[in-house]
Structures are given as C-alpha cells and as structure tokens.
Amino acid sequence: MRLAGEPVIVVELTHLSLACCALEVEAALREGLMPEEPDGPPGAARDVDGHVLLVAGTVTEALVPAVRAAWERLPEPRFVMSFGACANSGGPYWDASTVRSGVDRDLPVGAYVPGCPPRPDSLAAAIRSLLGSTAQRMPA
Amino acid sequence: MMTPEPAHGAIGLDPQACTSCMLCVRECPTWCIELGSHTEEVSDPGARRPRTVNVLDSFAIDYGLCMYCGICIEVCPFDALAWSPDAADPTADPGGLVLGIDQLRGWFATPSDS
Image 1: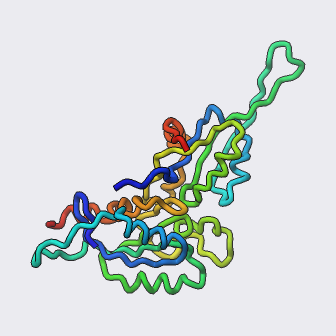
Image 2: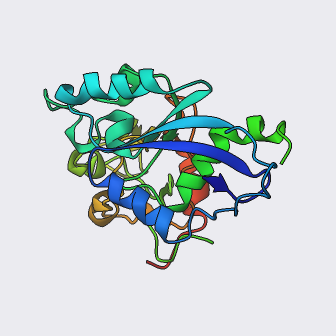
Image 3: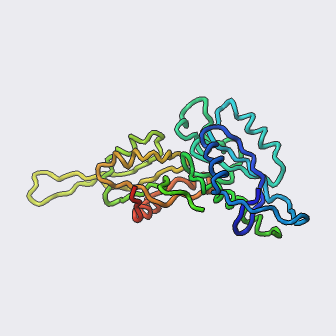
C-alpha cells in the first residue's frame, strides 16, 4: 500500500493477526486512518520502501515457530512492528507459561506500539517511524 | 484524519498529590506501575512524637504493558492520576515505553475531560 503524507511511503504489510489487536489493525486500515495514496501513473511505480511484519496480538509459545517462519520468508529490507501490549511484552498474559512475553524475544523489533489496543492512528505513525527515512531518499 | 474522540490517551501523574500509598501499583492488572518512595519524620511543634510521611522518589508506567484500563485512575484516593489526551508514541527502543515522573507530570498538565 502507499501511505499518503510526506514522504509517501510504499510498504508491504504482512499482518500476523494473532488476537484482538488484529481487528484494530483492520479497523485502522478501513476507516481511513491509514490515508492511502492512489497508485502513480504507469511507469512511475517504484519498489517498496520496505516489508513490515505487523505482529498484532498475543504470541503464544506454540505460535513462535510460525512467527519466526513468517519473518524468515520476508525479503529485505524488512522490519518488525510490535503492535499492542501483548506483542510488546505479553500484556495481561506476561506471566503465563504459554505466552511469549514479547515478540522481541524472537525477532528484532523496530517499532513498539503501546496500547491495549493502540490508537488506530498510531499504526501510520509506526510505519512512518520505521520507513520514513528510507522513503525520503526514494523518488516519489 | 485524527483518532475519533474520546480515545484512550495516556495517563498523567501529579507528583505533588501522590502519597505513595501504592494502591495503583497493587490494583494494576498487569503490574505495569513501579513506584519508589521513602519515609521521612516530621516534627511538629508541640507534638508528642514526630509524624512519618511518605516521600515519592520515582514513579514509572511501562506503556509496553499498560492496558489503558484506567483502574489506577479510579483507585487513586488523591486524584494524582488522570487521563491525558496525549498518547505515548511508538518507539524503536525496547525500554522506551517505560516513562517516568518527568513525562507523566507533563501529561497531567493537560488532563482530558473524560
């Protein structure tokens, strides 16, 4: 998708929908809180600025291999966004033996988004914090 | 477009109003509040023995854990905690979501109506 704003960011989101935060991500995408730029004219297409693995929800121990596999399949340049308290730290389940207390135990997280759930507009802010400087260098 | 109001913002602290009673710390479902304090003796003229008061040394909320449930705000007997319309920003630093007195005091200065 192309995220409108300055600079325009072309990003491929891989959304790991693991719990309720996933609904908040969908809501942010659909409610116009992620302002989308129309595709440029043909021939003006540019490569994506980056691939973002969006981890939204509780990472259970059983899912850790699948989360790792999703990350390993992503091409460079790639980034991990930890969306919400569960992905950040385990959230309300941080002391449960079946829940990973933070996806940063397994993956190099580039942006921690606070909230339970986070505010919808923080999704765009986090993408900007991950890719803003890269997109600045790319011709629009 | 902005987040529709009312939205869960951040939680601000008034360090002057806090008595270090620890109610918020104990009631927090995720244990995301850390509070440090010590006691000092105050000798009032004419009093038969000195009083003991709590002095707040540190107060931090881990916004990586916080569920924004507001229970800490509800239980605070002295209204030292309040919702703020501002929000903690996404960060790249793993410890960057643990915010201390300086940040929380700033958020208390702009409390929201809700």
